Length: 256
Image (cartoon, rainbow, N blue to C red):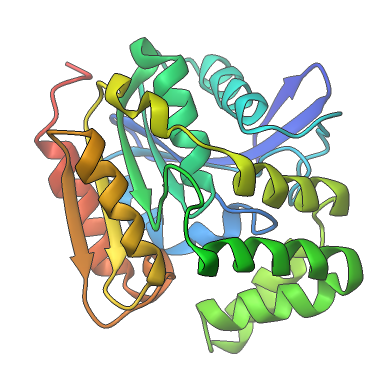
């Protein structure tokens, strides 16, 4: 497995395929294993799945976790691989990193895809989800890992793989990733988002109400609602998810 050496440790990542690059960004705790079913996209694209610092196999640890620092980390990874321009696919809070990257480094961003994404936490349900995550990281991380893994899959081996990978996370990093996601907002800068954007939500996901912020602030973006699924679209509806990504990126000419 390749590793990217940065000043505060090593970032581990999987890199598969050839073509236009997509970097996938995971939510707090989960690591790259949550993107198991996006590997088939390597038939068309170069897909990159990092364990962000403090997660999975990565030995890198940020002294202070912020969404901005994670965006810088993604830039260092892109530089290490030699990618001039990348598409970013952020899942849940990973989408905050994708948005921050696109706003800070627009010249390096080909497109962003947000699965269950939000510009800020502005609903009681999503705030509660973050606070509960923070509580369980502090008090029972094994319980949290089991709850998250079971929400994604009932397949025994994959569930065990997700749990094992989550429990490799540095607990302080896991906690502060939740905290920073809870307090992050790019609402005031959304009008400056000048890269192609695709929003993907499950029809049963309460987070899809956050679509309204993008409708208020942006005139031109793509959206799709996947039926009969809640938040875990990349795993539970991966065929539809991958198809939407491929169709969206085929329309873009930012790399060319």
